[in-house]
Each structure stands twice: as C-alpha cells, then as structure tokens.
Length: 216
Image (cartoon, rainbow, N blue to C red; front, side, top):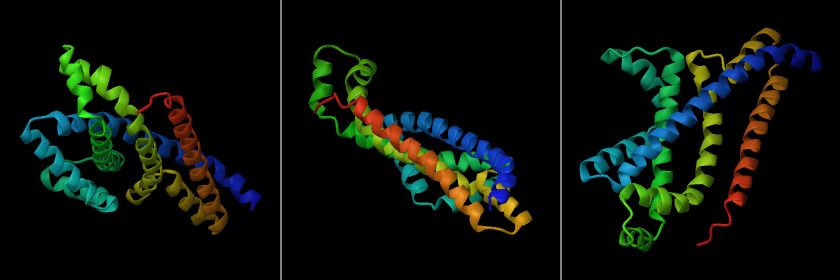
C-alpha cells in the first residue's frame, strides 16, 4: 500500500495543482461577478434586477454537471469553442456566481434600512454609503456562507475530470488504471480533499472571530 501511494504521489501532485488552479479561478471570478451582479440586484433599476434574478434562479436550478456539459458541448453549436479547461472553469464560475449573488443579497438585505437613511441624511453619496456603511456591516454576514461556497467550489472542481482534465480526481483514476488498486488511492484522495476543506473551515472560523467585534 505504501509503495502504491509513493508511486502515485507525483501524479497526484500534478493533478492537485490543477485542482487548486481551477478552484482559485472559479472563486475569484465568481466573487467579482457575483458582487457586481448582487449590487445590481439590490440597487439597480428594474430591468437590471429582473435580468440578474432570472440569471440567478435559472443557473441555481440547473445541476452543475448538466451545466458543465451544456457549456462544453452546447456552446460550439452557436459558434463558441472553448478548450475543456476553460469550459469547465466557465461552467463552475457561472454556478458559483449565482450563489454569490444570493449571499450578497441576503447580507445587504439584512442591514436595517435606517442605516442607509441615516447615511443619506448626513450627505453621503451612494458609493460612500456602500463603502462606509452598508458593506462593512454586510461583510460579516456575507463571509460565512461565502467560505462555505469556497469549499463547495473545491469539491465541485472534481467534476472537471469528466471533460478529461487531469485534476486530482482524474489523476487518481489514471493511477488506478495502472495499479488496479482503487481503495488506497481513493482514501488518499478523500484525505487530501478533507485537509483542504478543513483548512478553509478553520480559516472561516478565524475570520469570523476576527470580525466579531461588530455588534448588532
């Protein structure tokens, strides 16, 4: 068993690097897009709110595996050809963006309206109200579900192996095809995913404690 793990480690290290890269891209891109669209959902004009709401509800209602296959196999039908790596990143980013929109909507919506009205009364502009009043308070509420979403992104990245991308899961399957010993390698893969997600959970708790001085 130890010999099989030692043989597999170089392959798993390469696959793990791809998993980290995919997860990082998805988390960063979805955060940027989700925050922008979430602000549009809460504060934008009616047409923008409707468009963002339709996008969020539609994407969240589609199984992520179906979304990945739709992006990879469906977009070429309309002339958009993406490599398997970028097709997977796009699909995962769309799914995670829809979730970030809801995280932000819930966080901002939980701030009492009196906070914004008080900021308006002292002459703050819209951007200043967001930067100095709304977002600092909403951040504490946004952080826990977003960190949980990051762990979901790491776990969801395993689905990119279905497009032939050599991530951690695909690397495990490749080694199993050579050694014909599945259980030790699947256990090792589960341990790696657990360690990464547990570390993210610890970071989440530490960040929550860091900002716990903000009281209701």
